[in-house]
Length: 617
Image (cartoon, rainbow, N blue to C red; front, side, top):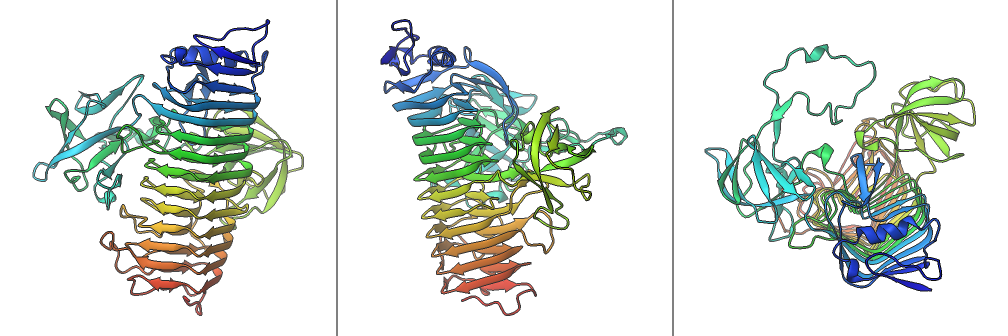
């Protein structure tokens, strides 16, 4: 039985239908009608929600509100028209509709559910969470540049600072980067010009050194990060729609470039398009995310997520799509599949797959510990579920766990601190300061037939020890196309890549914003010779790179580089002419076979003393 919903929802024979159809009658503000029906889902289950094809606006004023801690985002009072909590076997079919959101909303807030499918929908915002300005003049003598702002970006100058004013939201210059409108991508050598230096060291400080803390603090938290800093920039209006910015510390941005800014780093990740947590089975098919004030999709502690033709691209003439990652997976398991996707112009990675390190603060009895969340944007994250295997890690001696326990329970005390109990006694060697990770909280990963380009930061950031295949993709990113890290000091993102296959991809002019790094890069925060990465294959790829450095291998045991072709594209000037094409450090069992090198590096392979006989072939 299908039910047609106009201004709200109706009833038939005393029951609400499992198949719901919303019409464009609710398009002016779809929030009340959609929310009203979803709130009835526990009593009257829904199997499918369809929208008559059209454009639907969603406003936060009558939306469902819930305080939400979202990994790699700011904590937020989330507002949504679609609180999909504890639901199962639900399909939401937009039938080609466009959903336009206003202000701080999370379009799809999915928690503790099973088998959720979202299909045939376009997600966008009426006003973006970032702002863009065209550079129209610069003046080296006065160290200033002029920026023209279209009517899409209302602003005011408040105490000499530029403030962009939106519906339900505002931001300052904050984080910024330069785009080239002719290429619709990050400007070549952008790091010379941006980010805009919005703060400087405070002129006056008195007795700050007297402030003492009993416990570790986070210098990147909202409270700590502003201490010792004051506004550096001064902004004046030249004429309505044109402002002049003084005191930038880097090279002045060239005329004709577009400056993109999104506000202060600890205040600008508030509204991802999809937030999925504790969910088993999620499918997105033919979904286009044109914007979000954060990530296109963030999934935590979920399993079996398949994104097919899930595209993140800008709209309405904007340079930028999402203001953070296109997609991001934390502590997920089962399978994660990204296929036939386009990830363009987002202000962070195309995807990031990892777990989370938590630091041991207290040893409580024989079976319990107190742990601390290391990063402000990981507060409240739960490390796993009952009986998961937890690894104990001491990175000073190894990147791999030295012992294992099984999880009994986690007790939330506050956002930073949890008490974790295990089924077994703690090992005698456990120390305060050690880290824990959930060794089951990693997925088998497939990234296939995707276009990853024009964005800030990396393409793929992979900290995943499970089987990973990256094939038949196109990469052209501002930083590394593929970064394989152990991040133990900033984001506390756990995981050591292993069983990784990178094949049949095309890499075109990555690292074009000026970083001196490889296109594919293995790196650890802790500088030692311990092995972190194992069993890597990089085969049959094409590297068309304007600069020399292609591959940085570090802390790897077992890497095959075979059948790859490397050329110099000539697209941009070489920035680092003295670099080799490949560096190898602190590694073993590295093999080069049947590769073709047609680049311009004077030295193809640079290696340390651990592999004296290694040769590029």
